[in-house]
Length: 267
Image (cartoon, rainbow, N blue to C red; front, side, top):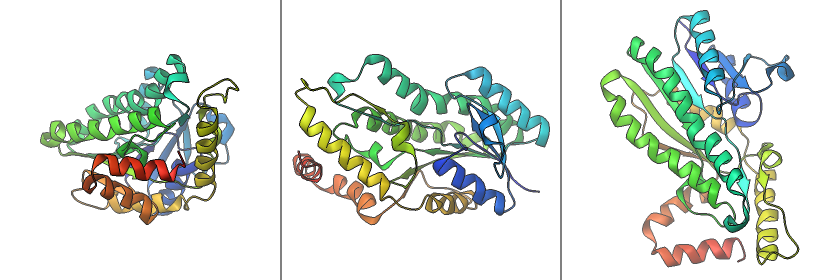
């Protein structure tokens, strides 16, 4: 029987690439969007779901179970970018980012666990970020929200081991998607003490996304994980130097690594 897959945020970017690839491979795929009516030409079903609204999550999960009788794989892909000097980002925007990137996946996981426990099987893949392994300048809130999800997965794996439910993280680097357009950008204020370094860093970040890798790399990685009997705790997908930056953080003294980051961002 074909495996049934739920992908949050499956209407564009990495989620769309994963959904289309898994559909081609014979999976039954359900993506989600807050506005599914905008994606009537999708190659797989798009359900209404907002990770910040538990009612929409419960309804989407119930629809899949009613239709298919099971739910094999959940991919927590929905996420939001945020940039700015931490001092200048409004508290409401910080909380909104964590609601999407951290509490959102928790809401989805809580909604699907009863069905997976009933099946005595299931796989949950949390899409995090290589940025979650380090505190990046002017992306500190994003780094923190994705880093929190990485750690949450580590704890969840141990709590779920008795139910044959697997969980893993996949941390992408920079990919050529529309994520930059959907970010919250703290405004570049003329009287801000951060105006010049933040402006330069923002430009560099957008260039990285524009020249990023093919998002199909993530689709290939996800299929490989689905076909792995016992997935690892962490996976990284992206350019060599982006993945290697995590290795460097482990082996270099903190101040030396900090200096490398500052040189990279020209700070």
